[in-house]
Image (cartoon, rainbow, N blue to C red):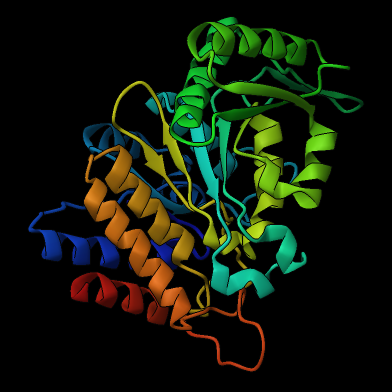
Length: 349
């Protein structure tokens, strides 16, 4: 457990409550160990990823994270930043494929800024490469200039493409690969490798290439046309925040970061939201759904994962909505109320 900063401790507390409800219903025992990451770790140790935290994560079967960062740690000249801890953790755990499902709930179609007819029936799985690209490249800065190196190897592109291909075979067999091949050499390598891997290893998967600017437009114009969306690191970071508006809120979307082993890193895609931290109004559904992905991918508890996902869906249908997705004249529930609702539905179903 890495609660992190801002609303991170609030939403992860509800995810833990729901995991405990799953354990009681299905006869399991889950052991939780909490550790520091991000701004909280900087305050306590001066290091955004302390050695003790990394050791705890390495010894665990899975890692569930809340959110990190905030203005008190992230000003442009800060020598140590919370995000450095998260990037280092991803690299150290070897979680190179970030899965971000986007499937708007039918009861929340009015919560999106788009027309309900545009988002109804959307079901997208974004596969974002997570440990390469410009976030991990060499960086320089002087008084007059700065640079960030975007670099990819063939092997890095191959392994994340295989994840996308395998997922597409379980879905509608359509991969849209996002790049900027008309400008960037890394994107031209990306496009070449993606084509080869899918052609040779997943011949039944239809491949479509799309430039990132066009993808940003078509995600809002015709989102139902997307099945598996394969992206490099930075493009995926940006596009999934945009795609969250299809569901209605950043607070609704989970993610799973996976590598070559069962150990994964699970977190909602939202940030630490320091403006609402401590107010008890954060949306915990993204964190709870991340816990469901943890059950499915790291613990191979598929029935339990489905039960938790169904409980979230039923809680939304029952009107347990936090302020970020509330429409009309109803009363928003608290973060704890939403978690209590889901845990109760797990127990009673």
